[in-house]
Image (cartoon, rainbow, N blue to C red; front, side):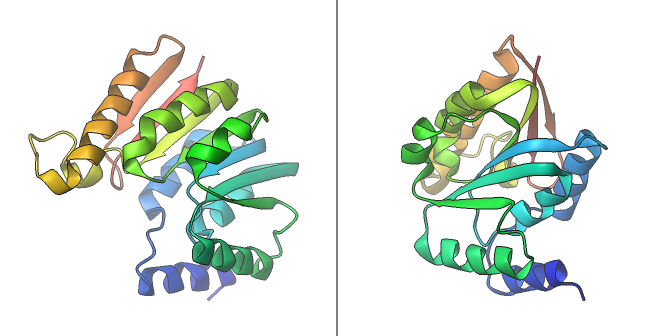
Length: 193
């Protein structure tokens, strides 16, 4: 078993949410052979998806990934070092709501996979940070099927409302070409024209 597989198995065992295989495959398929210079990830967890995305980077390419949980940051740093990718993956500790407005880089790809209730804010910041022709991916956009159903339990209501708002924003934005894919837990793919 390679190191990445081992990290994946540990995440699953510890109930750390990670990118689903079919979602990851789809992202690889969409990016194709293009090599990316900059990737921004909102929501690092233990760094598994950032490690997977690192194979899409150009030689000088870098990933910035934001995580608010200190324990997750420590674990992600350890995983990134294990994979010898600490020169490529920059882990930023902090709440993405506070961190994003301080970033001024431009990115080829932005991957949103953090607090579902904050997706509209993450989108607003992503639109500022994405390069022309860049792609914004939002994971878990269908949220266990609740987003497209008339589900209205109080516990998930905020998340569902904000995910529906995100879908409305990306599908109505004239600068974006958006597809909502029913893979994994739902993936919104928005290309900046």
